[in-house]
Image (cartoon, rainbow, N blue to C red; front, top):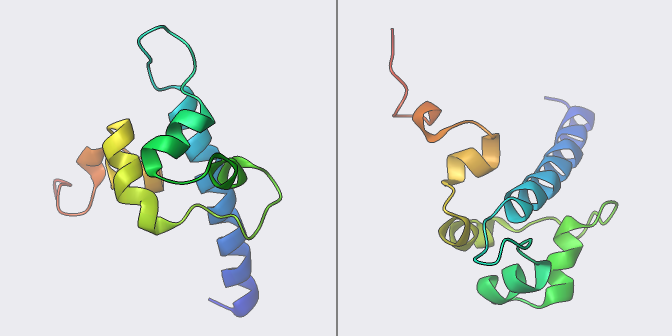
Length: 100
């Protein structure tokens, strides 16, 4: 992979993660049927609301979602890391795939 290809991959992955955390958060059920807010997610992650909002904001290249928060994000949402990072079900995770 060339440096240009790697740079493009990083941008694509950053955008993928931005969209993924928005989709997961906004589809989380709440007791009253309302949307799970950025503020609530930030509180659960133990970070400031404006920090979390930056992870969801388009065009903020320095505000990519940190992998250090992935484990806690998965605990909160009930998603496994493989699904968050790839949008594939856990059954397709390495070591769980059935070889033919």
